[in-house]
Length: 138
Image (tube, rainbow, N blue to C red; front, side, top):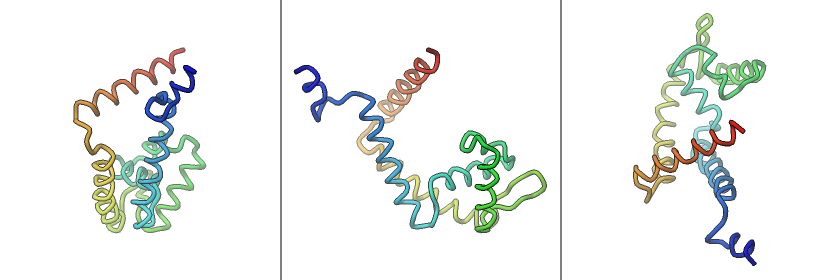
């Protein structure tokens, strides 16, 4: 009886909600970015290159060197990124694409946080960060 009550539609555990939000975030961002022919990983990589032209900034997104090389080659192949020695830089087309994507992503973020105050958002992120820390240290 307790489990059934606990798992009712209005009282699911945090793990269920985390997976639900993650799935919906992936779907909504994929839909928003698809209009520009970009996936979420490419959006993240474009931002990483714009922030710091070193390929090292891609490591959090793609820990394996071979995966980074493939991702970079794909961006270079589409004319969005160019190699400048050991550095990477957005091309004019890459900068233009990133500007358009920034507008789309900002709209998705507003949609995601609609009806949530800044304080609620900050508190939620803080709680999730602490939960992740708790689980990582045990």
